[in-house]
Image 1 (cartoon, rainbow, N blue to C red):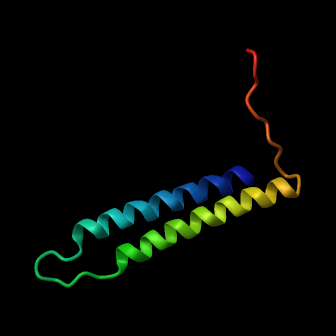
Image 2 (spheres, rainbow, N blue to C red):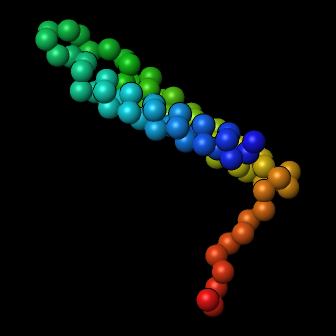
Length: 74
């Protein structure tokens, strides 16, 4: 369950980033005014990133995940 939630969060972050890129390339062409779609997509990406970070901290605080670290000396 945790890895599915983590994977969905990463897909959402990458999807919002891709949407912002598309809006950046398409807005303002052909005499159309620029819209705020790119800004909203980037705000969504930042919000998802912060939410993912807070969820990882919460999972660590509740003991759902344990830090493994890197094995040294191998």
